[in-house]
Amino acid sequence: MNELDSLVHSARAEFAQAATPAELENAKARYLGKAGRITELMKGMGALSVDEKKTRGAAINVAKQAVEAALTERRQALADAELQAQLKAEALDVSLPGRQRGAGGLHPVSLTLERIEAIFGSMGFEVADGPEIESDWFNFTALNTPEDHPARSMHDTFYVEGGSAKAPNLLRTHTSPMQIRHAVQHVKRHRAALDAGQGMPEIRVIAPGRTYRVDSDATHSPMFHQCEGLWIGENVSFKDLKVVFTDFCRTFFESEDLVLRFRPSFFPFTEPSAEIDIQFQSGPLAGRWLEVAGSGQVHPNVVRNMGLDPERYIGFAFGMGPDRLTMLRYGVNDLRLFFDGDVRFLSQFR
Image (cartoon, rainbow, N blue to C red; front, side):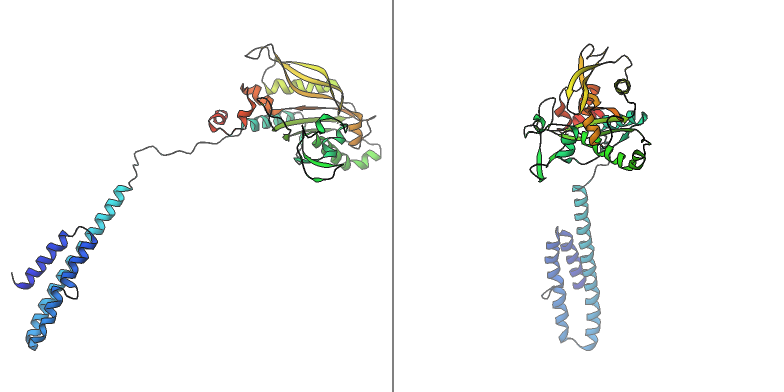
């Protein structure tokens, strides 16, 4: 083995022993650097003749190329080893089950609202929607609520900026304002016929939505839901109220033996007025009377505020709590569970 072959063999051995790119670069410098062994051999050619330079130079170039090839090979080997180590460290075990994204579902109160709208829709009722920030007039005055009524006080009502001292803005305490808004618009559309004495189509509407009152316990929430209903016509009686609401309750709870009781009460916007209680004949709530709604014949002053003649037009209104109906339908005894945002609880209703 001549000098050049020994040099190449030595370079390959050192390159093979380099465990890191830094060690490999140090080994390279000993052979191909400015003071490396190959470089020194090239510098020593200055004392040779022309013919010797050709022969010696060619041999040194062959040796240099062999060293560079060995260097490149080792660099690639180290890079491959580093990649394999990285892949191993970041390996994904595809044999494990995937992380499935749980299926979503409607909130139980949303399910109840959809059910209410579907049942009353089958009876010919429209669905009205409106602002949650209301004026005092629509929320109280138009509904025949006296100025000294307790519901107007700060203890029951969230007042907000805007309006005036005599007509403040507030978070609606019920969805009854939508009955007035819908009726007023209905009357405007048919004003010409009314003025001509021709009458108008009946007003038949429900108004589901969020409402707000200063109250919070196991059966009350500062934000809760209500669904108000209104039927106004020339010959709509309390008997129609009983038939409609009885049919609704039996359909909603899927129980034909459900009993309803209309208990005399007082509301400023209806006269006469009645609380509606239901009684299940079977199940865990059998035999108990449970209040589910307030109702009554629409007060003449409210009919007048709709722009109608109370001597000609009459009807009934009711207001119920979808949250309470949801509690009864699913057997939940704490209203706050619906609004705590606990997915473990809510996922039961998917």
